[in-house]
Amino acid sequence: MRAAALYSAAGSLLLTTLATTAPVQAAPTAHGSAEARGTAVAAGRAAAAGIEFGSCPKAEDLPGSMRCGTVGVPLDYAHPDGKQLRLTVSRVRATHKDPDNPKRKVPGQGALLYNPGGPGGSGLYFPLVGLVPEWKRIAGAYDLVGYAPRGVAPSAPLSCQDPGDFFKGPRPAPTQPSDAYKKKRAAEAEAYARGCAARAGQSLRHYHSLNNARDLEVVRAALGEDRLTFMGASYGTYLGALYAELFPARVRRMVFDSVVNPDPALVWYRNNLEQSEAFEDRWDDFKEWIAGHDAVYGLGDTPRQVQNSYEEASERLAAEPAGGTVGPAQLQGAFLRAGYYDDYWPHRAEALSAYLKGDPQPLIDQAGTRTAKGAKASENSNAVYTAVECNDAPWPADFEVWDRDNTRLARRAPFETWDNVWTNLPCAYWRVPRQRPLDVRTAPGELPPTLILAAERDAATPYEGALELRRRLSGSVLVTERDAGTHGVAGGPNACVNGHLEAYLLAGRLPARNASCAPRPEPEPSPAP
Image (cartoon, rainbow, N blue to C red):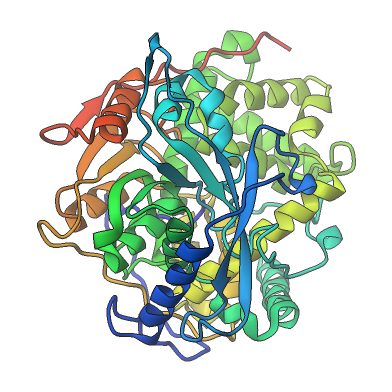
């Protein structure tokens, strides 16, 4: 996800008080509100109806071993008898097998429900992790359950524009955009916001994080679980934090992996500013790694030389896009993904090296035109991302605020800053009433102990978010992957992290205090192109 937070070490970013173009609604309380009563009604109905699992939707290309069903949730929880949405849920039953002892039958512990983040990400594929060795012990004890949140296909999918128009390429990626370019992108953002309102109509206002948390409560009830065992990654941690605030008595166990800072003052405009700053550090990590493998890639033996190689490629692509589809913006987008996951590092470095040596195909393969099916899925995901974040909180309505704050930030963090602006700028022109973010805080004994996982150099959800959530959730314990930056650390190659995850999910056992794990190994370079 894009929206996460880290307070700058310099602490020098001055932000203007936010103004909105639409009225702000008061946040509901956990008890006594119309939404709370509506959630109780919807959960009661879901518990009575359950989920009829059968074949999964063909369009999702899920394997036959996975079963799917749907759960009805109100579009508007203040009116639970009104329009209903159908959320698609996927499940693979617990194997009850111990991978270390085939003769031992593992007792079941109910459902482990997962949200992968976004907002706009689908968790329907999550149950397949049970096939991965690192997940087999957890898959032995839990039914692995994923779902597509409201708005995410096939759960009442949102759309803001024709998917055929979603990928605009090739495009420039100026780190110091001109006034004319800013005006053009602002006009596009305003048009996109209008498209969201036109396509979704009055329903648009109901796609936000508080309703996502209420949906989670209804899905829990439909699964027949008295209490929720939940794992959220990235934006899924913010969703989980809201659930913990609204329904603390319904929590059994919760894992927060790669944490969005839940401070309501940061959701979401300030979050994105600080994320852009964090990506600059991660980009530096990547350049240092490439420089350390200059013998393989020939892109320079210092980070500055690697930067020069990247800029040379960007200039060439501006003059003549690779394959007619890959321009500077597509190059930046491909390398931004490497900022999330260092598994991408060898492939991206190889593609950049090949391109500068005259072979554009690897870069085209990694950053080029998507299929029509991929464009439709990406447009849907982006529509949900935009709707949820714009609905969740106030945003500046004056582009001059965005311009001033990001011009200042781009002087020290040019890599991601303006791309992040263009992604989120529709929120400046949003006409739907906003929510007020909840102030997530739990008192001692109010919530069962929870596990927080974070990589120290994660840029997508920077480390300060994990520290903030630990302060806000009483009894939570933080496990840190030191000197690492991959976004999402659970169930990966770090045995130390996985040991803490298994101890918690399988036995409810947490470290006595906050713990740390050595970093995962750096990726190995690909063969020379």
